[in-house]
Image 1 (cartoon, rainbow, N blue to C red):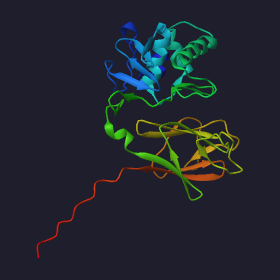
Image 2 (cartoon, rainbow, N blue to C red; image 1 turned 180 degrees about the vertical axis):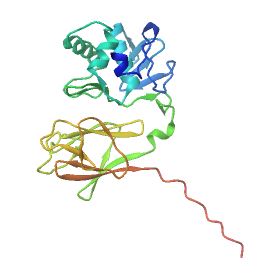
Image 3 (cartoon, rainbow, N blue to C red; image 1 turned 90 degrees about the vertical axis):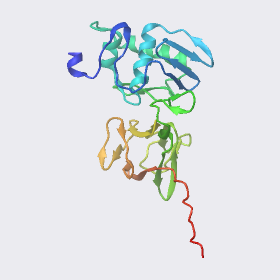
Image 4 (cartoon, rainbow, N blue to C red; image 1 turned 60 degrees about the horizontal axis):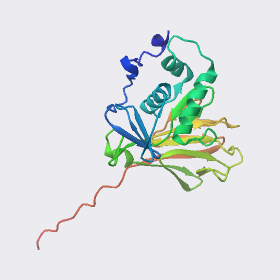
Length: 248
């Protein structure tokens, strides 16, 4: 049943995960204050190796390979405990252990994000030590993202950006129909997404109410309640062309 539902997932020998992430197993992946070596099954935090139980490592591996997509509870249960029924608390325990190792928090998650009643997603920005993105494309960080609201430009930074009326939000939209923590805009590897955080009045992209993580494109109209924002993706300006004057 699992393979019929999720045919893109291939469970490989020795626990290797066959996700088409475009990231070779030999590459070192850096995020927050950690470095992950997939082929060696090693995680380093602040330069010190941190031992991980096999299921905890597998969880980290699949989340980072599938980023920024959400990996559902059903997928994770089948990957961690194939053909065995386990209580939901078992997965919650593994996630809690991983968050503790990474220095993450369920109340203010910067790395492992909980998607309500759905699953988990990897939220931190991932790079290859040396300055390139994890996809190997140095142009991925060249595009800048922002929102236009009420004649204001609201910048979206790499990683999660909480939008709402609360003063602690990265993107403050002070409108009466906007919840205190209304939506999360996430920028990762040159892609911007938005998801509703259980707001009172909902989040809409091009007048369609969103129920899950939604990718944004330049010019999209995003509504938080009745507050209308325009999403913008800006390419860096090219070099100035030199004008040569004819002798005269």
